[in-house]
Image (spheres, one colour):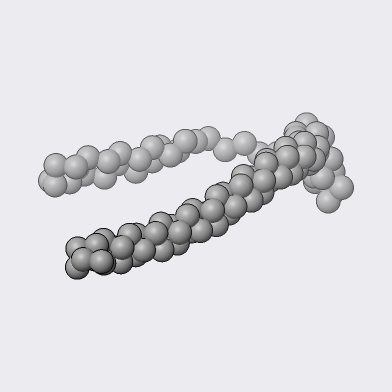
Length: 106
């Protein structure tokens, strides 16, 4: 076999080993990807179930029921309610930096 033939065979073998390694790595990544997709589907289903359960806890009726349980009294039933007027926020002088930010408290 000639010198070029031996080099070609050696180069061919190197490329085949590299291609085999890349194929094995690709297969491993595919398996990981499919397992992540399955995990994602499971988490989406679990999230939907938990959102359904949370709606029974976070609604206005649930908050009002909790407030009554801990001894809070609704405003119309409490005669000692004092409403205060809103006050204007303090006005600060404008800065000379060119950037203007205004905060209004409501």
